[in-house]
Image (cartoon, rainbow, N blue to C red; front, top):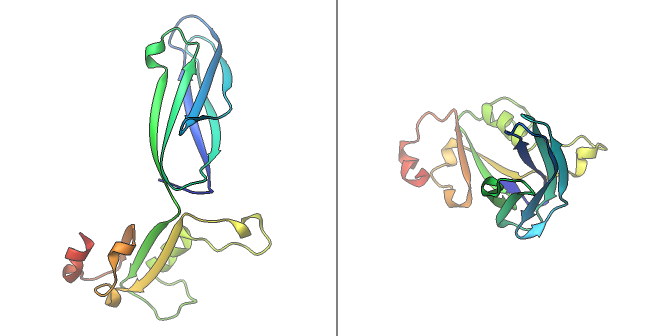
Length: 171
């Protein structure tokens, strides 16, 4: 699970299991058929190296990535495939079973979880324009029964004493 417009890193590890050095090995990543800048490496016998390929997804949806090791003498194991779910946002409902009534105070578990999922940027910092994948909504457990849970990807129950009446909605 990843977000549109957020930086992403593909990590590809290559290991030389032979007793001979391998030179001019090219590693390529394709994302939805488009190739990222390939990288070349050399490996001593028994050596392992991890390469990083940065990427930023421009569109939400399912994306396919393939890592390809070119010019390796054993072509059978030279490709790995990955399917990624990229979203505009992850909609998180935080249900607070112990609300304190003061919206400015950090008192309950739901308050701290909300701060972790969507930290407030420091004015003037590099993080001021940062976009986060999570979009949180916080409600009291008293409002859980009337909430439309289909609008959320994740529901977190924090200090909720009883939720038997809402089990069908949570399923």
